[in-house]
Image (cartoon, rainbow, N blue to C red; front, side, top):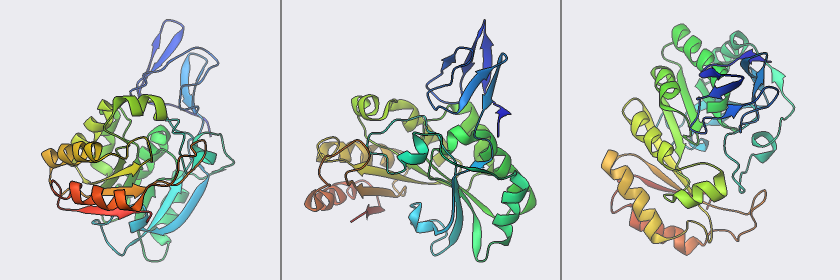
Length: 284
């Protein structure tokens, strides 16, 4: 469904979208880098409002969240689109393309969340929730107003501007944030983004809700002891109790590097544990 977007301004005959740090300047008839925000009739529209491509009742540990509501089941939903272009994306069929979807009004999603058996809330995941912002915000707000005990989880790349993040956070209970690397070069070349805004998101979110961080260790790209140590140091300066998920990479999408060496995963865990109290190995 098409709906007028939030967080934009007109700049002469163009639109400046400031939802995320790309700060796209969009000409009439064109889309932003996320491929779901479009300039039409001197307004910015989001084309994926309420458009759901994936929905599933998942163990919360799959988000992954290890230290938030362990053992719980959570309704996980996603749309299409992303503001990154990661060559190793495991959900590229919905992140990099306008995928087949079904429109679900926020009231209908709310009913599903509240009536699903043994469900603790909703997780916005699968594709990037931040570029599905308007629907995520509306649903999170409505859910919290209806049942304050239901939980809202965001699984995100963290590439969101500070204003929209702070507007959403009062309705969020937990986030898993990807910290893909501690290298600006990695972010630019492999993801099409930048590092500093993600670090800022982690710092801001950690003051407001439960945060866990995931780093995918990609063979030949960010699988060094030095980089893992930098990530662990950064997180420990915020809070030593932030859980860090070190996840094993497998060839996906456009990237054919070999799978992460298990021996390195174990060394990385040992290094990270010098700075953090909770380090988890994933995908092994």
